[in-house]
Image (tube, rainbow, N blue to C red; front, side, top):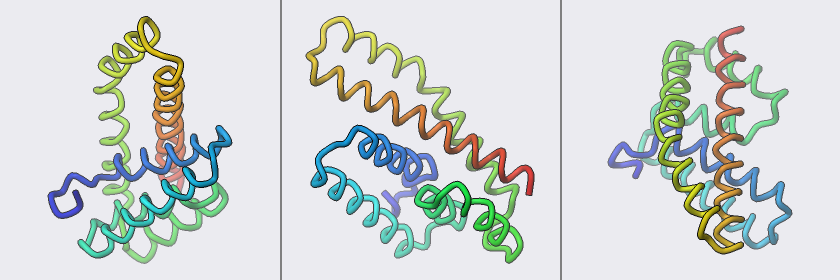
Length: 148
């Protein structure tokens, strides 16, 4: 995905939001560790493929605490690792992609609610929570970046 340009800030942020949702559900430790390992591999792939600075920054921000995000953004903007404009453009792109996919996601959720199994419902609920968490995290990062 990294080589083909399909690994975007949206993909990285969604992955970390999913990890947070899985942790919040008190999922088995093995599942959390497996997902965490996959996300670390994504981070390694980004670094190896020379991922855009904005994407690498988003990946680091998604792992950081809210308190650390302001300092990390300020440092990235100050030293020129990433421009504020590029960061905001990528975050806006991610949020737009969530909005564009919302109708299909809602239809999928309705289908599961009407005829899905309990397991499918739980998976759909986790996916919905991950989408909302990703939206919230990226909106928060966008608002923070605008104030710096």
